[in-house]
Structure formats: C-alpha cells, structure tokens
Image (cartoon, rainbow over all chains, first blue to last red; front, side):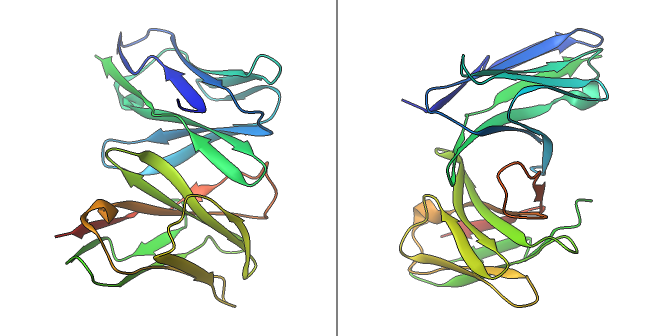
Length: 107
Length: 114
C-alpha cells in the first residue's frame, strides 16, 4: 500500500474546465509538495505547503493536515496544462511520492 | 530553465559498470537532492546533501553513493549496475535544508543499462 495515494490516475478535460486532483496520505507529514512533469520529462515544482492554501496564477493548492488530504485545482484549464501531476509528502527526512495523475486538456 | 544543470543528458552502459552523474545547483542553493524515476517504481527520493554534508537518506541502494563538493556541485555514483537501475535520475536544489523550501529540478539524466 502506498503511503501517498492520488486520484484520479488519468483525467481528460475540455479546455476551460475546472480541474481537481486529489492527494491523500496515510503517514503524518509536515509538508506536501506538488510537482508537474511535462511530456518531455522535465519536473517543475508547483507548490510546497504545510497548511491552508496557496495560489499561483490559475493553480490553487490546499491542504488539510488533520484530514491528511491535499487538492490541486486548475481553473480555466488549457492544453498546455497537459502533464503528469505528482504529490509528495515530506515526513522527517523522507519523501513519499504519489504515482501521479496524468492530465490531458483537449482544445 | 530552473538553473539546475545535470550532465550527461543520456547515458548508455552495460551491466556491472559504474557511472557518475553530475549536478550543479542553482547559484546560491546549498541543498541538493537526488531522485530516481523508473517506470515500475515512480519517483523515489534517494539522498539529500546540505552544504557538503549528508542531510537525509531515502531509498538509496548500497551500490549507490553521492557527495557534494565545496563548490556545491554534487555527484551520484552508481556501481555494479543492473538492468533495473535504468531510470531517469533527477537532482533538485533548494536554498536551505529546511523542509518548507521549494525545490528546483534539473532536466534529468536518462540512464539505460543494457
């Protein structure tokens, strides 16, 4: 069983739709990292958060430490948002990664 | 461009061999992290160095070792290579070693073991 579970595994959306990707974890974590991996393989760090909510452009990340749950929202989705989104929980000096959500946004 | 560089971009080698992957962090970043991404295991954290010292250890095999040099670049050494070591190896850097610091990822080194 993975310490970090993501849902859905795959997601297809029409351009402009509001998208939510969920991340649940079973271990106690001190911070959660959202990563975006482009089709070419490059990884970009989107957010690192330990409580509350963070916003950057059309991306919003929330976390509820007590409920062990985080969500990544994308507003007004665009084809360039097509990527794999990975969450990672940090506990002590360890990182636990989800298996990723593959998002395809269709024009 | 994250400012983190990794060389080489691609590496093809044979089982039993040893390779060295290199990472240069963003200017001013003291922490370097190494990750392995394989098809069957996904992303895994290997090891973190902070200002030359090992800070955290993840799922790093005994055949693998790393170090961070005084100029803050880091090398990941993989020895006695096996087919299962074929993967993308990423390094990332952050300003400090604290848990809340954002990490900046390099483009990765794709290792193929034949």
